[in-house]
Amino acid sequence: MCKKIFILIALFILPLSSMAFPQAQPQKPPEEPLPVLAVPKDYRYTSRGRRDPFVNPIPKPVTPPAAAGRPPVAVPTCPQPQGLKGIMLSQAAIAGVVTARDPSMTIVIIRAPGGKTYFARVGDALCDAVVKTIKLDAIRFVLTVPPVDPSAPREIERKVRPTPGEQK
Image 1 (cartoon, rainbow, N blue to C red):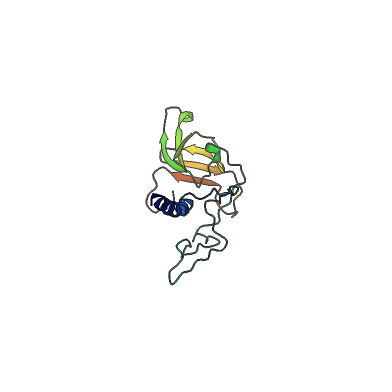
Image 2 (spheres, rainbow, N blue to C red; image 1 turned 60 degrees about the vertical axis):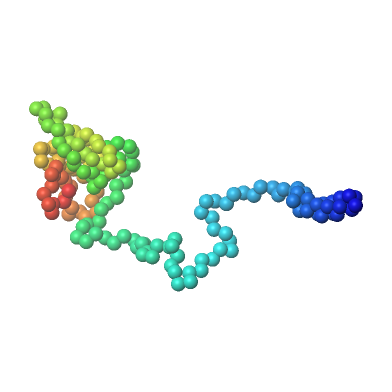
């Protein structure tokens, strides 16, 4: 009787153990990982009445429209090095003026894109202009690039504290 029970248990346990402990399969060589933003070849978005969340619903214009009332700006051909010589006059903002008894020691504080601040004296060059004069309320620059419009002024005066409606 004991032998019969043992044989019956062995017949039931043996097939179950093969399912519980399968034989090791030969491993495939590891595949190249896909790039982060890769899309499977057979993927296709089905909208079902919804818009694609990854497509901008307002397309950007291909060419930016010209600013109304402004002449076209000449792109300087000067290299864009680091420091004051890498800043175009249109990018610069006048932050202030530091005066001294000696006029050659008067300094203008120029704020540039990226939160950088530079100090310039008379004769210091920017990418497309040179500082000509520094007064308490205004700084005069002389353009060094040829203008697009021949009737455009060669000298530009920028106010330290421009009044409302006045160009900075």
